[in-house]
Amino acid sequence: MIIENKWGCKDTVTKAIEVGADFGVYIPNIFTPNGDGLNDNFQVKGYGINTYKMEIFDRWGVKVFNSEDITVAWDGSMKGKVAKDNTFVYKVVVTDKNNNKKEYTGHVSLMK
Image 1 (cartoon, rainbow, N blue to C red):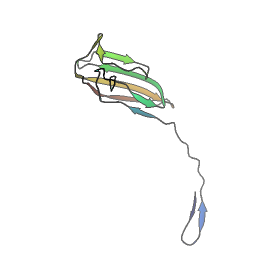
Image 2 (image 1 turned 180 degrees about the horizontal axis):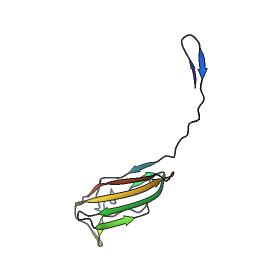
Image 3 (image 1 turned 180 degrees about the vertical axis):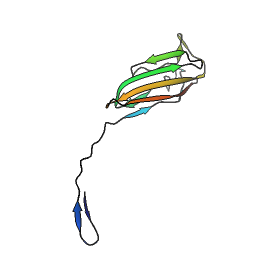
Image 4 (image 1 turned 45 degrees about the vertical axis):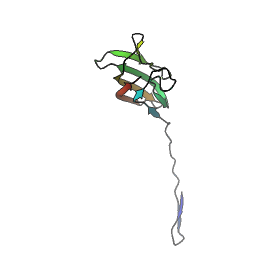
């Protein structure tokens, strides 16, 4: 950086800046598995993710879906059938490229 004040005095500073790995996670809060091709699956999206694990539970705490592959989405099925409109709890655990662990919990609504 070079700077000059109003009297013409100049100064220069050089400093190395370390840019960390890009990282981001997007988790929707609703999906509509009705076969119209729009929002039919619940899927986490992100970048800069090293490891991934998602678990989805019904309101009684019963696990209805899990995956360790971010490209695998939940289609809203439970025991082979599409679940009724309801709210489910998710837990997503990821590590970034620097192996920093991040945990996300929340609710997702299934509406047909």
